[in-house]
Amino acid sequence: MLREVHIRNYVLIDRLDIDFTDGFSVMTGETGAGKSIILGALNLLLGGRADSKTLSQGADKCTIEGCFSVGGYGLEQFFQDNDLDFDADNTIMRRELLASGKSRAFINDTPVTLNQLRDLGCRLIDIHSQHQNLALGTQSFQLDVIDTIAANSQCKDDYVNSFEEWHNLKEELARLKAEFESDNTDREYLEFQLEGLDSARLQDGELEELEQESDILNHAEEIKQDLFSASQILESDEEGCVQKLRSALQSLRAAQKNYPQAQELAERLDSCLIEIKDIAATVDDAQESVNFDPARLEQVNERLDLIYSLLKKHKKENIAQLLELADSIRTRLDRTGSYEFDIEQLTKKTESARKSMEQKAAELTKTRKKAAETIIRDIKELLVPLGIPNVQFSVEMQPAAAYDRTGHDDLRFMFSANKSVPMQELQAVASGGEIARVMLSIKSLMAGVRALPTVIFDEIDTGVSGAVAEKMALLMKQMARGGRQVLAITHLPQIAALGQTHYKVFKTDEGDATHTRISVLEGNDRIQEIAGMMSGSTLTQQALDNAKALLDNNGR
Picture 1 (cartoon, one colour):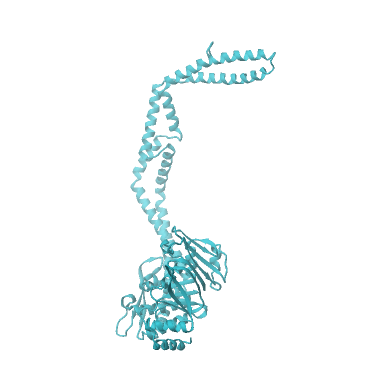
Picture 2 (cartoon, one colour):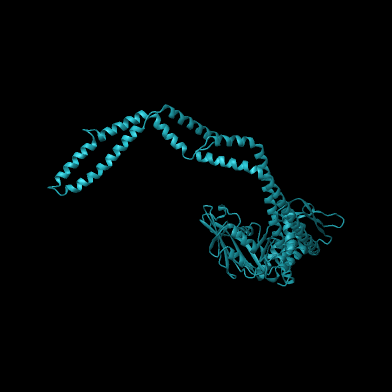
């Protein structure tokens, strides 16, 4: 149950605090006073789309906070699944909107996603706005009504799981068949590609080695000359580095007789000399090994040309990728032999899944047909006292053209308000007032099945007046039994007079700003409000007397 709402800096609302009670409440106010603004704030709280333009002018942050009692509605699992603290008496939902356009959501001070906020919100409040009357004619809404009354959630879940299994298998089978057809069509081309790759006898890392060898062969003379020069510097008989270092070592060893510190220097130089002699030998060997070989250079270049052409042809960057491609082609060619067997097995599996899905769809249809009988009976009983004494109402159900996630049912709500007029689709023949009454009746039936704490009707009374409006109010009051909250936003005095709590929304000018305010009406203030709804801005004594009588007759 919604206990409190606190709104800060939302459109014309700088600060608004509303305490709610259980039972049937009404909200009135002149057009433009801000009733829709309050509903907009509630929608934002329940995860609706945020828009930074809704911030009050000059504000840097907008906050809407709702406090709920959630005990007894089976929501413990939701809090456990989402790792949230569960407080049966004081659960707080909060939505913050920043001037930058960013939005944040919280449940019991824990940051949550908008999906989590919506998931909890739709279990706590159902807001019926005027545009939802248009949804009454849609297949999705009508199915939702039927399934709600049928209480067939488990049956529906079983069907959806079965449908998804069949659908996924069907797609996999189609993909496998297409792959089989493609591979068969491309077999000769694939074999040609594989032959070209296999005949190349590629080895991973070969390209880098060949490129290095080609570079050496192309510059063999230069390399040989450079290595020869280095060898001469290191080991020539008179000017070579090695010979000079030997002389330096002999001098250090001679000095150590009288200068002991020279021993360490001699040892260090001896180590260096050993390393330099090894380098000189290696340079000499390298100089001997490097030779210009035109025949080998031609072989290397031919091999490189082959590899480069394969890389370009197959749009690969290295030999490793070419080897992966060859393995992939080989796998596809090997697979063609097993395609027929795999397709046969998957076809059997898909057919089995289809039969299971059809069986579960039939079970789902059965629950819907049974619920439809209940709806037809109860809707008629509810609409007669709402001023449609000759109502005709039925639910037509036929097999749909195809299976989808909703099942295999094509249904339509059929309606006629007159005996002599045959039934047609509801949205095609019902007037605005009749649509409103049918919708209220349906909401009443659904509320009796769903454990929904709060229902808000935004001008559900469109197109009705007088005694019919009073009957609609009595139906909403009946919906509010058993601890449920029902709030009706209305312009009709007959409905306003039946509310156990009466809220008035109004505008007030404060300095240079206009703000929306709300108050709870009691006693004479409530009489004047209802009288104003009857007679307009000029209150007559007759209107005051009628308003008092209306309240007295409704037990107020």
